[in-house]
Image (tube, rainbow, N blue to C red; front, side, top):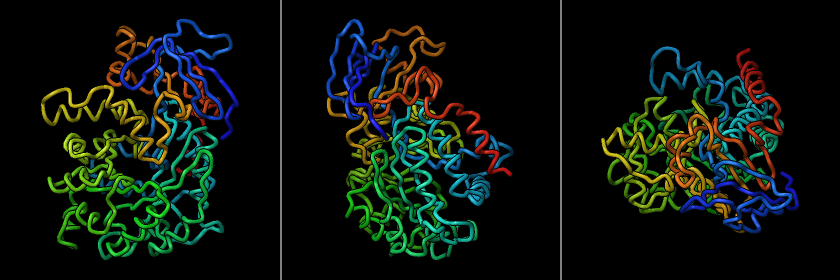
Length: 448
């Protein structure tokens, strides 16, 4: 990712963490914000003008890029998470480094159009079908890193350990390409991956059913030694909880705690079906929670105890997961609205808190602590929302945070700036000329 040496932006309105400021000048150099000036009524000479409400760049903290090929297909008929998973496996079976690069490039471009500047890719399709290694054992991960660069966004590749099909069971035929055999072999392979200007390397435990208990610590230790993010699917399904209790006599959260997985650099994804003790363990250890409301409702997973988790000390972030839709504003809105449905009360989070989950706390969960704020020394990543669309016209600009969260959608994103460089300008991606066509071609290649 190359950065322009210097660039000046005049933001008509900007979300500054606690309030909307009018006429904000941002000076960017070498990919970072060097100065912020407020109450500047007119654009300085030579400044690029961003009309609307500018937010810090959004963070999609949980992505499976290849799931984008399932959109629409899995809406035919009825079923459960487990029947959906069989369709997902059929798509995963067709991926190659080349087809995955093409699909991920288009998916990440779609994210940029939705205002996303960083993605956490929970990556476990490591090898060829049947488990054979590519000449470059990290060919699939490298394809994702290259795709993010091509689409102009940052990526944290959360290289995922996926070793078994369930407690005490070997991988199924579909899962052989996910597995390195042991956690030690997983660590050896992903240790070769190199960070780049736009890419950081993290770790993931697919789930307690997919990594044997005696190998959980190996993954946690790898992340600890590198001070890297560590993510894990946690209690997404009650069947996982029941099987864990049968195998180990405890909940998945308790098992992770026993093996040293929980902690401030760890993020549990979904955290849906938790006991009160689970909530205390997660919050008390500073473990984060990534909610993915559009996927959790699409798969009929349930509504997780996000309020209780945050109250216990778990930072919240958001992800689009299966990409039923890619819209971080909808994820933020859905977290609040799902809680309203569950409790029949309103106002569990302010718009400011929801924007923080969609930006600063999401970036932090991905190891980009310097992102997610419009302030000096932060990364120069910006997302501008139109305030004159049919969804956003009418409210006063000072209510921009509320308008963005509770009315706007990804369709209202007008500009996305990453490292001081326009990636989306006036609603068009500047690096991927025709994103719908790129998506259609990439998906068609997997259907053939």
